[in-house]
Length: 173
Ligand code: GDP
Image 1 (cartoon, rainbow, N blue to C red):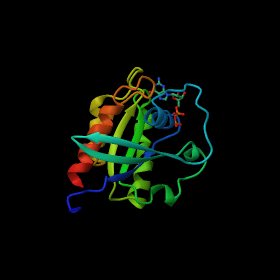
Image 2: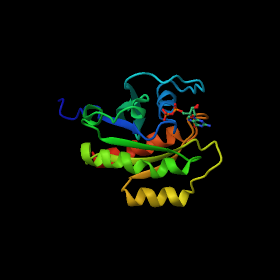
Image 3: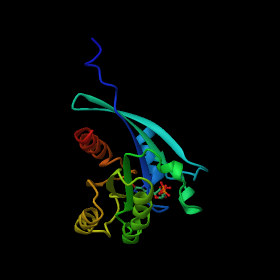
Image 4: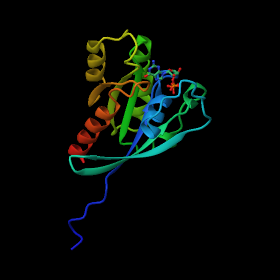
């Protein structure tokens, strides 16, 4: 009788990228749907749960933000443990932030080689210094499953990205 009941799939997702690209702002936008331009760096690592219903399937994300720790130390192994989704964040307004993601990708290869990687160009409300072509090339080179442009400030692109990420995960689940 209970055999048709499926547990809600749960995915651990981590935000990675250099300080200043907007990881904590994205985290806050996903968690509380707000943008705080005076966001204070918090000490330690924060996480939140986000449930989504996509194509009549419910999924739950446990999303982790480095909360500034990446500025001072490399991230610990526990940050990556059991991660299925890696959100590689750069700022579309800062081309070095895209290239610097290679450092985070090396970390991912070491600690979470099986995680699905997504490239996120944040701050799309600002003038673009990174072309879509460069982002797409980067994503292809580093085997990212998809590329999204988002703005934590306006909220643009975030829901769409979460839905598409969910679909990719469900298809490979
Ligand atoms: P983190 O160090 O990667 O966590 O970055 P923060 O979330 O602390 O953001 C760094 C700075 O970028 C802050 O001044 C934010 O207000 C700003 N910021 C974050 N996201 C956006 C965005 O989508 N658009 C704009 N214009 N500014 C943003």
